[in-house]
Length: 80
Image (tube, rainbow, N blue to C red; front, side, top):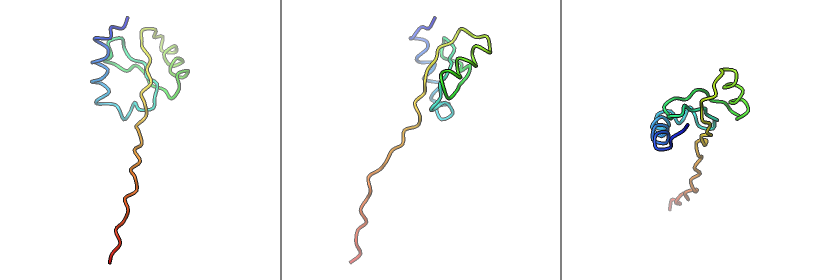
């Protein structure tokens, strides 16, 4: 059973170090949020991976992809 007061801080620490490799993927976490058991591009693939591994003790999550920031165009000044 997941206890949010344990899972959330642990998974946040893990994400701080591994965000780029997990971004845009579905993740199977340990109940304490310290371990990623598997990742997959789709939830169906993640479930299949975890079923094949014989695991039932996990929590799923989707890690948002890296946001793309579009800066406004900066006008070039005209030379006089």
